[in-house]
Length: 91
Image (cartoon, rainbow, N blue to C red):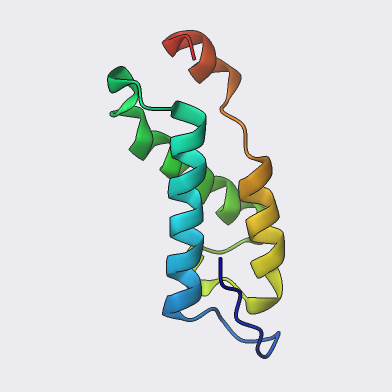
């Protein structure tokens, strides 16, 4: 994983945005595994993570500030599936 260190006040660039999206994809795959019944859930989980990030930082991924990059990656590492999803899909 590559972390680019730069000015703390400006918005993330496209490379940093792609790194965050790739991290979300890896976390989603880890949580859902390779089960074929989980394929439709991947986009739901990705949207949930992005929605929680928006709630946490008050902006979408495009407007995220560089000072939140490390916190964002920590958040993604700690993300767990919502209980309702675990129960409904028996994950």
